[in-house]
Structure formats: structure tokens, C-alpha cells
Picture 1: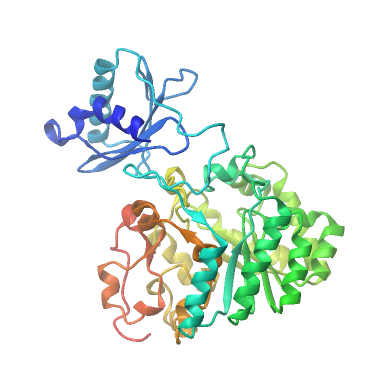
Picture 2: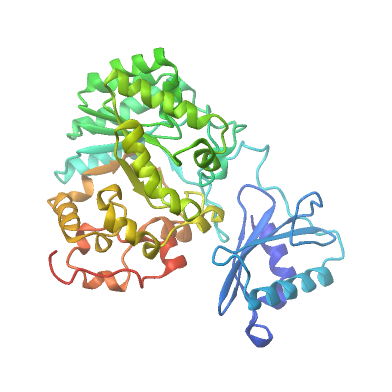
Amino acid sequence: MRHNEDVARRLLAPLHEPGPSGVAMIQNIEADAAEPSVYFDFVAASAKVRVQLTNVDRTRKAFLHTQSLTVLYQTDREVQLPAAAITSLGRLGQLLERRDAGGVAFKTPGGERGGRNPLMIYAADENRQHTWSREKLDRSLDAIAARGGALTTVVAVVSQPCEMQCVFCPSVDRDKARTDWAEKGDRPQLDDLLHQLGRARQLGATSVDLGGNDVLRFSLILELLEGLGALGYTEVIVQTTGLPLEDRAFAERVARSPATDLCVPIYGADEAAHERVTGTPGSFARLCRGIDHALALGRPTIRLHTIALASSLDQLEGLVDFCASRFGLPLHVTPLRPNWLGERAHLGDATSLTQLRPLIQRRPRAFAEAFPLCQLPAEVARERADRVRGPEAELRRTNLFDLGMSGVEHARILFERAPQKPAPCELCVLRASCDGVTGAYLERFGSGELSPWLREP
């Protein structure tokens, strides 16, 4: 919000240039699009600290309270702040106390909590929104058809709340008070999804991945699944927490539906480890019961996945073994990704390739294709490269929601989320078959861990 950003810039004006002894300067001032807050990076030669300014709230544990403001910070690089960061934060505190005599106030950008558009772009210099429309989707699909393209697997988004409060999910997805979950109503959403997937089917799609916070909680999910079967989809993948499957009768109805695969997350081999991530008491036991029901019924196929987190890295291999012994299922490990709001608090729990490499070498097939091919043993790297080669590979997995979106995503968020191929990748013979790493990974760890294949493995 421009007002909040301008207030912050006036307060912080003396810190926009390097101070004495190389202490930090301010970069990337951004007004929050959801609350009366401003964020910026405080950058010194050896450290970067993310700082939040918000209207004063003395009930919060914070770095500093001035007359008008509460100041919080976080750093995701080191547990103990380096001396330059400590000096810089002290300088910031002195400046704010001197320049804030009271009466400073950030405005609330939105209305009631939870009522904002979840697709708001977080940008300091623009306040545009992504908007989705069926007309835009149809035009995008028409363009694919006009150039002779075809679809194989498509992704569709089913919007509904989730029971869990996972630590890495966007804040709006953890907000159960949101009013926009049902803004369209379940029946209109069902009709819209069947339109999207009917059009995709006309272009040859036979596989659909239904994404969302927990697709099985959609009230009309069984009707949607039957509709996809009637359209001719032969592979119907559903993203779910697995918790709804603890109801045996519901699990039986899902087993009789056209759903072929359920993608289910698991974050620990016991209650404490799993629920530290989900923030939901009882979710581990419910998950296990749900998986047991699906396995006993024989369908759909259960695909277990987890996220490589620094805080539980020492338990990751044990989780792979637990899934094999407890459920007889393989576990697929994925990297921690930036979220679509551009929030960064969770990224401090990311793992580097160096940290993961010993486990990748021991269990390469447990690691998802989102990991760079240069980290894998030669045989596995070659297998994966061969799978993604071929004409029109970019259309093999097409997100229908993206095809219907208008507006330009904020450049920083786009960079953080999108696959990046830095300088080492330019030398790699498997470059075209690999997603590289995300921009957020590059910002945190750099490109030094990438080791290009200089010839075919």
C-alpha cells in the first residue's frame, strides 16, 4: 500500500545509504498487501536481516517498541546474528526512537480479516491483482489447438479450506476465517471445473491432477470425480491430507469413484514429528487410519510425499524406512518451495543440496524430479532425462488455472518460485531436461553446489 510505504521511507531515509564501518543499508521496502505492515531487507556485507514494521502492539514479543511502531526481525542464515547485523539493528532502533515521537500509523489495506482476494500481488510499486476468467482459459486453449498442440496431463485447482495448519503454507491458507473460500459456491465451482476439464479433454488430455489444500474436502468431490470419469479421463490424481479417509464409509465411496491416485503428505514417523509441521493435534493418527483404509480397499493408489526440512533432516531417512515398513509404500521427497504470496518466514527451514547429497546418493529414487539432475547418480539422472525428452514437452503437464489468469505476477515472487538455471547449468548436457533450482534457493545457497554433466551420464 503506497501510504504505508511512503511513511516507512520517510522514517528510514537516513538508512538508505551505507553507514559507518559497512553497517547495513535498506533494500526492498514493500508494503504488505494484507495488513498494516512494511517489510524490508537490512543488508550488510555478511548478513541480511528481514525487518517488519507494524503498528505498535506491546503484547507482542519484539525487537523494539517505539511510540507508534513495533519492530520485528528474522534472519534465516544463522542462529546467532553476526556482529554487523547486531550493529545495524542497533542503529535502526536508535533512528526509529529518535524519529518517532508518536502519531505514526500504517493503514489497513483490506477490509475485514480474511476477506481479501488471495491472489493479491505483493508489490511495492503496483497494486494489481491476478484475475481468473473462463474466457481467458478458453482463448489460451484455442491458441494451443490452433498451433496443433495437444495436452496429456492437466492440473486443475479445487478451492476449499484444509484442516491442517502446516508451517510452510501461505498465511491465507492457514486462515480458517476467510470469507473467500466459498465466494463462488460449490455448485458453480463444480460446473466451472467440468468446463475446464472438458475443454482439456478435447485437446487430448487423459490425466488430471486435482490440486488444492485438500481436494477430498470439496463437498461435491464425488460428483466431480464421476464427471471426470464420464469425460474419459483414465488417470485422476487427487491431492489430499488423507484425513477425510479416516471415515471408512467415505473411503469406500472414493474407492468406487474414478479416482486412481491420492497424493498424501507425511512429515514424520511419529505423532510429535508429523504434528510439529501440521500444527494439528491428532492428525498423525488420523492420517495412518486413512491410509490403512485406502490400502485395505485396494484403490485408489496412495502416493506418499514429504518435504526436506532442515529442522527434521536427521529424521528424513528414517521416515523413508517408516513408510516402507508401516505402509509398504515408497516416499517421495520434495524441496521446500516459496509460496505464492511471496512470504519468506518458512524458507529458513530449507535444506541445501550439500546437506541432502549423502541421502540422495543412498536413496536417489526417493527424491522427486524437482531436484537437479546433477545431484543424482548417473543411472537415475539418465532415466529421468530420457522421460522428459520429446516434442512439445512443455505441454505434457499444463496448469489450467494458470491458462485462465490475467495480470503480471510480481517480479520478485516470480523469480523466487520459477525454475532458474544459473551459470553452471549452461555447461550441462542435461540442461533441457532439468528444472534447475528455484530463485529462492539461489538467493539462500547460491549456485556453487551445482555440478553440470559435461557429457551424457
